[in-house]
Length: 439
Ligand SMILES: [Zn+2]
Image (cartoon, rainbow, N blue to C red; front, side, top):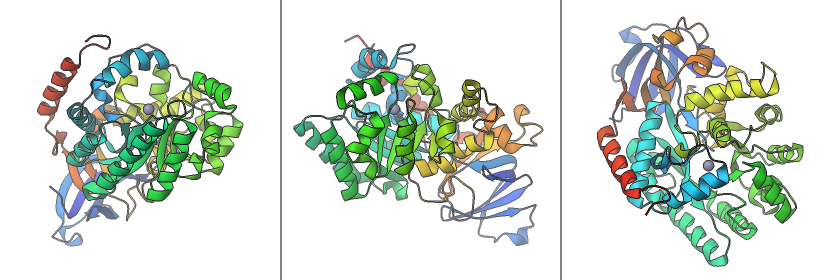
């Protein structure tokens, strides 16, 4: 149901992290964009008759959440390798299972991720994985917005040529597809899985196709040490030296960064995806987010894959981003609620290279929005909506989700996906994959 003209009557609206309408209002949506937000009640005469009306007087509308880093089909590996450090987790559990993935598996795993994200209020997500045509097909069917990369891990000339050709073909097929909801980016996995020549070639391709890049940088201390030993510089200085940072780059993690790294991130306008839960679970550390924000670096929030989180619930990341940095710094003013909400919405949209206006409910912005049940006990009395959303709300409060004005969740019911079928297929596929060490 793609409604051209829609009028959403809600009890309140968070236009952006800095602007709240704490009274009933009418959100007019036209051709996938927010047309206007009218404050106060309304009479039929005020709203043109051709607008389809949706009454949600007990809901607060917020901009859809933007998940800035993840590997969607890793939902298939949820719970497959807990309580291990990153390198053992990858080598002993994740890589053996990933070797058994097929296009069909990635399709159903991505659909599961889409279901989970729609249910928890995410309207746009970032994905870096394999079998990406199948992932893109799932995104197209789900109605979500996706920023998709075919993961690149290559060091020898033939491998680099192959990876570049794969990404180029993927971009040809999917960039701006699904009514413009899909953005293709280039996805060199990390400096420790891509040679300097590979990073250089990716930068070249990025310039040629005018596509942004996403990469993991400085996730663990071990990565930084090994990069310094091998190249005599930090992963971020290394990315700079290869020319990668001359292009628009979204860097996931940036946990172990020093002042020189932060200066480079700022000067090159590198966007950072902060993944607090994944970094905690893999014991990678805590990114210096207050410092990054103070330096003016654009920071968005991400869940990372479901095997290292283990869910795709952005409300958890939101709350963790707003509390974790207070705990580690001893400063209760660190990452205030509005900053955290901006990271999950407007700054997140900027971080994943969406056009200006995304991640807000301002007129002209894409109509990507989420309704939360204002009657939930933990959202009562509801006097400070930004605080409530960051410190009290949860995925279960999400009742309705719209992307580009199209309803993907209506009164907690999926409108684009068949949940029963997804659950069945994912269980079947996961069972056939076997245990990490098994046959
Ligand atoms: Zn990742």
